[in-house]
Image (cartoon, rainbow, N blue to C red; front, side, top):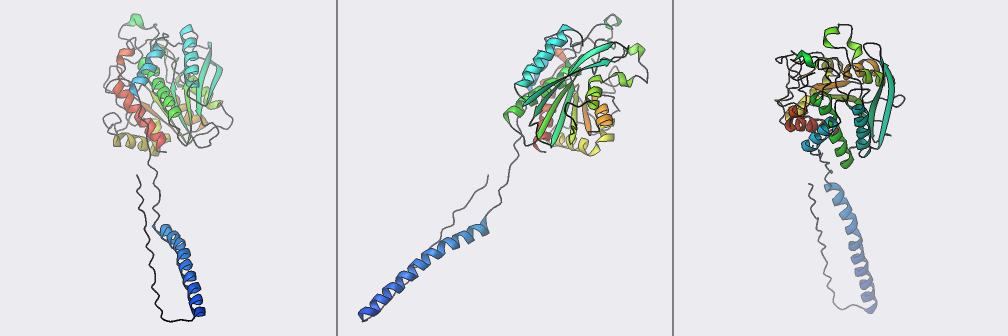
Length: 357
């Protein structure tokens, strides 16, 4: 708040004494007093202008960061799961795609559905849909936010081998990132930042080969939607200052270390995001320590289209799988694993990054 003080100017008057004067002298004196009085009256506005100019306080713009609604984000996560596993080629996948398009269409200035064909690990051709919501699409200064919206067709890390071929709900692995971004889209609709934003929900991120057939050479069989978009952006010549990918951002007591490719391609920006989270009191979540190198959607964005992009991802080397949270790629990756406190931490951090830009 800026307070302005009123400047009060006082005008002094002169006293003229005279004795016996001739009539003509009296008339001359009358005109003299009149001129002096008007002259004093005309000089004051100039004095006011000069004084105001010298005492003007520069106006300070306060940054107001919207409050991220974690309950709303939780609803958006649950809504995705209500369609069933979002495995490409299924009715559940198609129904969820339509809902995502309609929901984001109610918030964004533009929604683009990028349909594509791609070959998965076993050479089958699949149809995919990248869903892109744009805010202020004509602004050149842009930020890219992303997550994947499909879910894994195999529970190939489930403790029970009978579940290996069972599609998963993907509550944390996929839906949590989308839920956070949809709530951010709602906030961007209500509170307009002075920057262009593109939210991209990538398809076919999680249709990599089953665990027992994976090799070190199979990294490009993941992130198929991100690979397609990076080679064929939705707008010719598209670029952004930087990007943020959200993956597995909803589990209770999640930890987000400094992921390896994020630090390789965008170290300064990665540190800045973690510092913003730390200042907000989220240091227990955004831990300032090195994490592993994860081949995720951001890897292909960095490598192909070369937009510096970081990954906010839950990494836990003490888990049963040795890298990700315990229920990763299992049938237990369901709504019970989603914690509103974690959604709040991630969503509020990302909104702060946007509005402090």
